[in-house]
Image 1 (tube, helix red, strand yellow):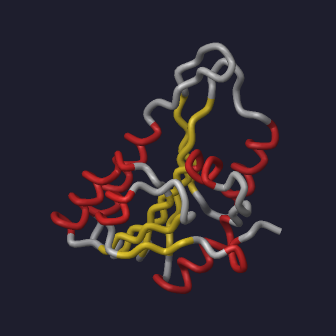
Image 2 (cartoon, helix red, strand yellow; image 1 turned 120 degrees about the vertical axis):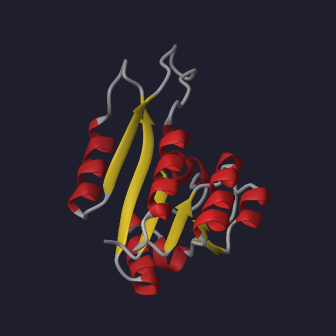
Length: 164
């Protein structure tokens, strides 16, 4: 059982990395493992059922699964190109956050997101399960209420986490 769980909102990483460096997920997980020990990682994202998953994105998911990471995909609300809306990803993320917090062996939860929608779940995890919650993210596109809700905020460091 993991000592830590890392929950990653892939959509956040994609948006927040624009104009920044691309995140090396494996290097980031290694940093987490060094700090907190055994770690289980979950990657959350949406996909458009009308178009499926691109070969490049599928290759990424396959590579991450080969590293032991769990990939959680939820269907988007389909529409004309550019109008698709993500559905269920945040709920899945929050459900996993609460589930992992309920496990006695998990002492730390690391979140990579910037969304204020996670504040109630983070507050519940800290209050009811007394778990340590770390926000591990880019410096930009992070809601201030989310920063205030966690125990610790780590910003990604390009010198350690830039994909090569």
